[in-house]
Length: 342
Image (tube, rainbow, N blue to C red; front, top):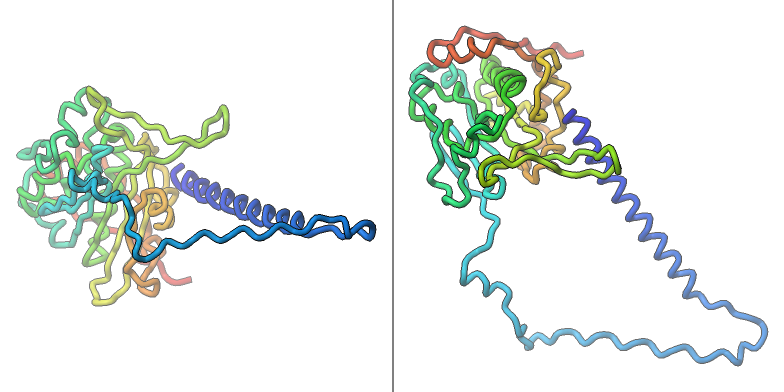
């Protein structure tokens, strides 16, 4: 379970830090004890004189210039890493050239954008993103017979307000390999629908979605390792072990409250009866696992926990019915009412 995995990672890190601290203090204590001379009442006059203190190293003189220039390599080009920032009408994303997947994709939805119906998915096709250098680009043939779906990070259903906006969600820079049956076409799609239904309660909702590559404990030796498949011929696109969504549900007031929700799901078949809150994690857990920061400029006093403000539950719908909604006007949907204070 993703929540347990992240908790274990944090625990292991804390334990390792505690052990290292204890070892440092122990070694200091041992050094202090060993340097204290033992005075014997007999033949003290025969002890050799203490050695002279070693001379301190001569500091580097201010006028002495370094004989090397490591940054001179930049004359041939900056090695990186380079994360390609990719804005479109419906998304903003940062592309990870190493994994050929986005590191994150951000979107903004409102009641007006979700209720608009100015586009038809039947006119959209998956396309390679030519803004990415060719040697770092995900390819359509990488997914061919891979056993994985081209999984939207920002769903097409969130961009029906414009055909161009909808089309741009089909760029491969908005895709990651996802398990199809039981995940991309089921539980993950229900989570996307949950995010859309938040606009029935909040006037502005911002969502950041992306992949994770989390360690798993080996049953034989007990060690933690990160292992994931790479698809394509030659192998090109990494298959994430997990996916995250960070949700900012805004109350619409300047300087107002923001309800935060953070979820991590395994890239695997999930029973539709599994409660959504079983995948809820602290936002800091996703930050540690991804190396990203999501709310560093959001003051603590403005933060609310999303699942304390509304009922975090899924509305399970058939995949075929969801696809029909992309070609017509969606039926009205209701979200759980805010919980009364206890």
